[in-house]
Structures are given as C-alpha cells and as structure tokens.
Amino acid sequence: MQAVESLKMRVMPLAAALGMRPKREIVMGSLLIAIFIGLTDYLLGAEISLGVFYAVPVVVMAWFVGPRSAFVVGALCISFWLTADYAAGLHYSRRWIPFLNGAYRLIFYAFLITILTRLRDLQQNLAALAQNRAKALAKEAARNVWLEREVLEVGEREHRRIGQDLHDGLCQHLTGTALASQALAEHLTPHPAARDARRLVELIEGGISLARGIAKGLYPIEMQNDGLMHALENFTANTSDMFGIRCRFECPVPVLIDNPSTAAHLYRIAQEAVSNAVCHGHATEVEVALEETDAGIRMRVSDNGVGLPDPLPSHDGMGLRTMADRAGSIGGQFSIHPGMMGGAEVICSAPGRWLA
Image (cartoon, rainbow, N blue to C red):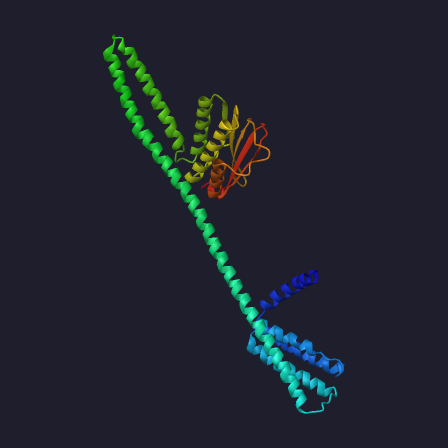
C-alpha cells in the first residue's frame, strides 16, 4: 500500500506537468519514445521482448491527446515491433502469424485506449463538477457574509431610528410636561400641593435624563471622524455612574475613523464587552483602550473580574458570537483571553482600509 502511494506521489506531478504541455509536443515525444523502444528491441534481438513497453506511448497519447491519435501511435508501435523482430532474424512457421500477433496487440491497445479515455472523461467531469461545486460554495459563503453584514447594518439602523425617536419625540414630550408641571407648581404656591408638583418636575427631569442616556446609547456616534472617541468616553463615564465602578477610556493619541459603520461596530463590541465584564465577570474596574497601529486600529477592553471559565464552555454565548460577527463584518479579528488585570481581555482589530 505504501509502495502504491509512493508511486502515486511520483506520477501525479509528472502527469500534471505533461498535461500543461502543448499536444504537439506530447505527440512528438510519444513518437520518439516509440522509435527508441523499437531500436532497443532491435538491438536486444528476438530473445528479449519489449512488447509491454510499446504500451507507454499509447497510454500517453490516449490520456493527454485523444483516442484517434492513440490508435495511430499504437499502429506505429505494432509496425516498429514487427520490423524489429524481422530485422533481428526472427522467423515464423506461417506467414500469417505476425499479422495475427499484430491483430491481438491492436485489440489490446483498443481495449486500453477505451478504458483510459473513459477514465479521462470521468476525471475531467469530476474535476469540472468539483470546480462548479467550489464556485457555488464560494458564492454561498459570500452571500452568507453579505447577509450577516446586512443584518448587522439593519440592526444598527434600527438602533439609530429608535434613538432619534427617543431624543426627538419622547424627550421633547417630557420636556414640555416638565415645563407644564413647573408652571403648575408656581401656580399652586404657597399651597402644600406645590411641593408635590415640584417633586413631579424632578421626576420628569430624571426621566428626561434617563431617556437621553438611552437614546445616546442607541445612537452614540456622531458623523465626525472623532465620534468613536467621544462616544466611548461618554459610555465609560455613564457606566461608572450607573454601576458604581471604575470604568475609564484610554486613547493617548487621537484615532480618527471616517467610516461610520466601522465606528458603530467597534462601539457595539465595546458596549457588549463592558456589559459582560460587569454583569458576568463582576468586575469593579474596566478599561477601554483605543489605538492606531501599523496594521490598522486596535481596541482593547480589559477588566479585573472573575475571568474566563477554565475550560471554556463548548458553546459560545450570543454576545460573543455577535462581537465576532461584527468584527468579521469590518474585516477585523476578534479574540478573548485572560487579561493582565486578572479578568478577561477582549481585543478587536480592524485593518487600516476600513478607517476611511
């Protein structure tokens, strides 16, 4: 079995090299091989037969050129064989015996050529089928990538729409309600109910701040190229106030991103990573770092939480899959591993071509 595999490994590159040569060269080479075998057969005499070697040029012609050319070379090989035997002094008891032997050999060549032609056609059909299947799979993979990107973009547009509706609709409505409540409180003064009215104004103003915070989280990034830095800075500050932890943003050198989609995906990845650190990792300190490298942009979210389970679970959560999909949609890479702060560290990198 090993000998067969070794022979296959040697023959395959030779066959591939021959297949790339022009048919004219293959025909000339096969004829030269046949002539060489005939001369060798003549020199060795009638006692040593080289009949099996005459099949070599026939096989080459049948596989790389075609059955008709192979039949022609086969007939020439038979004539070379008979001529070599006669020239070597071989005599037959009957004149028709050489023709019978030639007919037998021609039948053998015909069978060999037919089998090789069928095998070649099957191999070519299989190669074409494999190539078509590979193209279909590549097309399907590209379509899946496009669909994933489109789903993420649709979700991002929906976030923006809801954020705008909250800011332009609900916040404005609550602001009007707060003004009306303030006027009511002034009208009720000095009645004791004025205190309740002022308390109502405070609650409405708290609702306005909360709605604005939610709207800012849904639509955090402005169209300017420094929007991601401002969005991450506001997000970390709000996270610190909301959860009572230390969440800071580090960006020593300004990172400008002209592509709003890239900035939005990076922000969502940071948002999800911080949420996981606080809710699942029970972290009390989180750092979001943004920097530009020679390869592009690199964002890191590290915490001092409980870290990653060891071993990692066999199934990833929806948050991890979403972060990985977002990173892939901008041509980047996503990884998560134990961090230097003791907890987990999420790293997302995007190539420089996505910055603009």
